[in-house]
Image 1 (cartoon, helix red, strand yellow):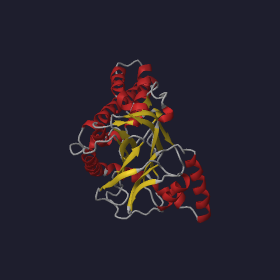
Image 2 (spheres, helix red, strand yellow):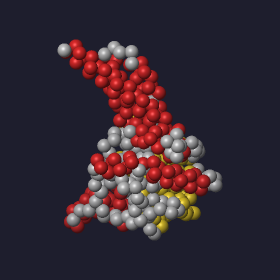
Image 3 (cartoon, helix red, strand yellow):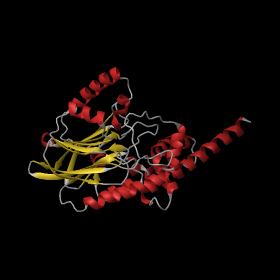
Length: 356
């Protein structure tokens, strides 16, 4: 009986391992499949980190069992390594340029309207706001900051923490570009969505160069399938299993909206002759068609110089990345960090760079 049970357990392990390999390969394929053709493959890309971690463990187990299927698992794992490098930085020897002292620092930060603070009683709100300000002041080397979900409280906190003499913000557009260097031109790429999902751009003169910085927030994934007309900055955000299921259910719908928005940014940036930085919350992973559209035209800071875990948002999905800093090839990225803060569900991204 024990032998029969052992055989049954081994068969179950092999079945799970093969199924996981198939889903892993589909998630690797997902950036290359247009979202209007197959939404199911696109959804697989959301869970790539889970499939990859499971594949490592299952490959080890099947290898110890000395089953021939280990070769299929191993090949699937090797095929997925380039995709893994987009969520876990493998740039061991990159960065550390001798000219780092003259580098410019760009930050991109979805501040979530500072909701973890905004929902507190007044006394606690003041205390936590001061703590957030002190935390931000430790990042005082930031030269340009692209902000998203940038509301009334977030603005007050940033103004208290930093001295940005030049800013580009627009009323009822909850993104912005903040700079220590002069902004000589600016504008809006209007998505015709709500005040949070939008894009601003600014041309910034830095020493003898001019560069353009875009700050944007692409369409959010909604569990109810509807885009809200009004955004409440102080609303408490609850996350549940039912909401996660709803987000997966409507993922393809909102991916198509994001694709249209990315195409609008790409079309606008095509007419710019300056070096370009594109910073924002994509609400999509590196294993998405949306990401691949942008990556076809621009380099990404984390891929170029990132090291270790690339997570940009607190989530039950490990290594989840949905925030990025992209740039033209005449931008030379030197460092990249993503810094956790308890005052937003997103991490603040920072990268030092020079203009070639």
